Image 1 (spheres, helix red, strand yellow):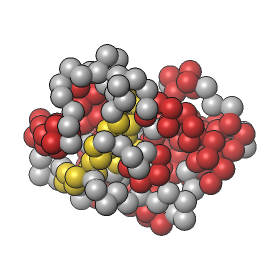
Image 2: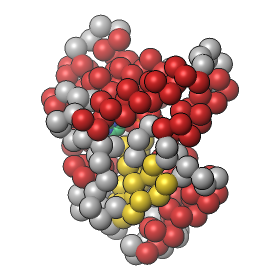
Image 3: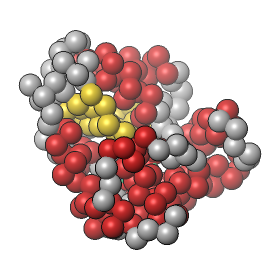
Image 4: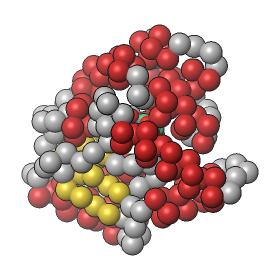
Length: 209
Ligand code: CDP
């Protein structure tokens, strides 16, 4: 049985944590689609043409160390504006979405472009300040040397590029359930997500993945 949960939203809104928890709850497989763009962005930083890198991408590339750094995040949002890059990554994401046993995909355009027919769609957001604070703490915990203002500026720059690009801009699908996590802790955000997905017909333990 296929059941697709699409979770979109801006950087550091809590999509990743919510998606992993939701996938575990329903027994579904999970794909962080940001990693696809990060892997291509990383190859661009190493000198490979982004479209060629996207066409040659293999699942093992998503396991590479260092994809979560701030520099790779900015490179990801640069390659993500290239229509040929997005097109090259489409089939893999669609096949993943319709796999047997259910799938959770998180990204920017899952509910709007990759999987408009997804059974459940969430749009997870939070204020830029709250998201930058979370991302700053994550980066520092990972050993990066940075400051809050730099992270806030990067967050705003990336939001702007993601929301204004011509191809698959970041925006909620019309039928997405909105979850603003600015004032929620992670347990409350996960509970809100699960309730919204149950209301769209999923039952816990449904998947086989
Ligand atoms: O984890 P974070 O939210 O910071 O970023 P990410 O989800 O890893 O995505 C990195 C970049 O990839 C984003 O800023 C987008 O430009 C791009 N992206 C996209 O265009 N479409 C997706 N489905 C996922 C990511």
